[in-house]
Image 1 (cartoon, rainbow, N blue to C red):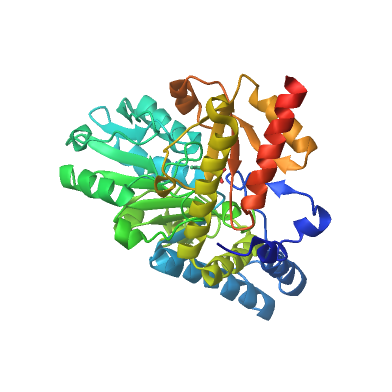
Image 2 (cartoon, rainbow, N blue to C red):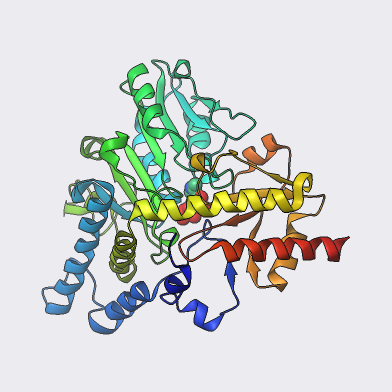
Length: 405
Ligand SMILES: Cc1ncc(COP(=O)(O)O)c(C=O)c1O
């Protein structure tokens, strides 16, 4: 495992809050100094707009901005011209639904999603199905929160297949590579969109290896700034898709009669982007690369394995942990039900001990309905967490029992 105490030194938030036990990286990760410094570098040294200026600081900003595109491309095994900067995962998925989905989905189409999707990868497809009269098919899950996918779900009508790589509630790591292969075998024309919001920050993800058509993820969950998301898409599909937003920067020529758009990725990047934030995302990727994504995964696997064991040991039947029993099959996410205590009460008492967890439906209401709970408490781990944090969570839950009786 990493020396998390050493890693914590890179995260200035722990200087301000040395007592903080941060167990909410699934919502957003903390940011290392290297990322914050890069953001400050942009704002203090070359805070000009990109692509427009014929002067040095604008050229520098453009160069740094494009460096991030290259960095991201290399990180996920893609080509830079297939990397589009948007605001977050939500926008990336909406872009695909609007720009391509609307074009290819009609009354005869089927869209397949899973029960474990975050609303970001559920509502855009549900809405598209509703507006275009298509049928929405849902992949169910078993008792351990594993997908019950069968290739028979894919027919010649399946236009879209949208699936999360890692569940933000169950922690399930879906066997996406295998599933994509099955989907494409059943219908090579089905467009496969992978929600990588909880995967790219935690595992080695390579789009060529996965053989998906689109991958969406957010900078703020992988040590980078907020306000930046990435959509990777296959070149030929990006060419086929309509632009998402129209306006400045995405055009080649505008005449009164018609407009000619730029090539991808610029065709999808209308308006001034989050320049400093995109630039600083490269530092986040560098940070993760230095640690090594395989090691990040190993660290989280060991931590989740320890947490599963210790929580069961301490609380037995009193705690219900959702998702697969084996650490091998899950990421560093741990959503649970604790006695009959309400998750909001649990989170509040934990907060009084400086332990930050999440309580609620975690933007996965259909999944919570299936689990027959209104809300869960969710603890999630990342590179700056260690076994001591798990012990603190246990102490915190003991306090919950004491206070709430
Ligand atoms: C699996 C998954 N998909 C999508 C999202 C949405 O990410 P964002 O809020 O950055 O758009 C999240 C956020 O928690 C998530 O966990």
